[in-house]
Length: 301
Image 1 (cartoon, one colour):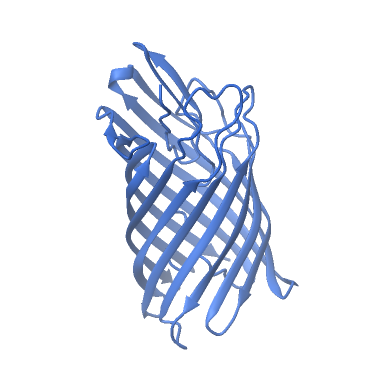
Image 2 (cartoon, one colour):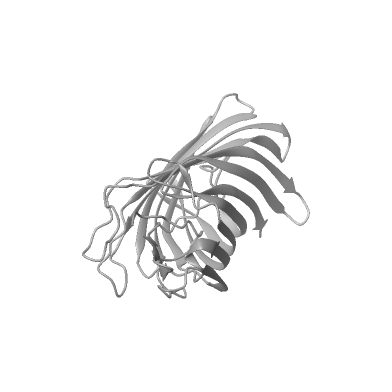
């Protein structure tokens, strides 16, 4: 049967057979909608705790032709993650140097009535390690660069799609820029790109195809600490899934796009920067299609 991908926001591999119905697929690690407006602007030297609350819901699956299939499908996923960031104050190649680590916890509930599938669970996801973060700042621009990896330490059970671990390493290259259209930096456009490569999946001969993601945001600063705008993402799988255990169509490469509103507000006391974004997916191929809501709160120390 043709491949159907389950986007589980740090989620895992699905291989279920029921009533003669089979699903199988892979996705990358990076959770889309993590960044938006000002996404390529790194903070000044200091210690930060970034708290992600990302909710994804989908009631439809799109096939390789982007046509709606499996109307009895439901996916609800909530990711809660803490990211500790240290921008050290040291310089490397003229940029501010920093590092970060992120630990995700994920609850997932997935149903497919015709397949007789209903699985839910809460578990630790794969830990994100970012040993190199570089940020350049100019009068009308910011540039961000990083090298990072997802370590497969999360709970992984290939027979349970609700488990949050994936069972393979992912390595990610990130580069992006924010451009300010006026000297006061009230209008800004940010574009952040991420390229993921994956290793072979544990206990299988499957290597997921590589992914390219682009997150963008156009915003306006209305008041000090208050920004409003629109943001979205694009993601393409640009290499085929490989390995002798791949049973689906290797030439089908998934993709997804989204757009929606975003708001930022900086609370001076207790030094908390809050971001709220909501995005609707469109143009989806070979994966679920739905809505994503993200609340990101960053504590400044």
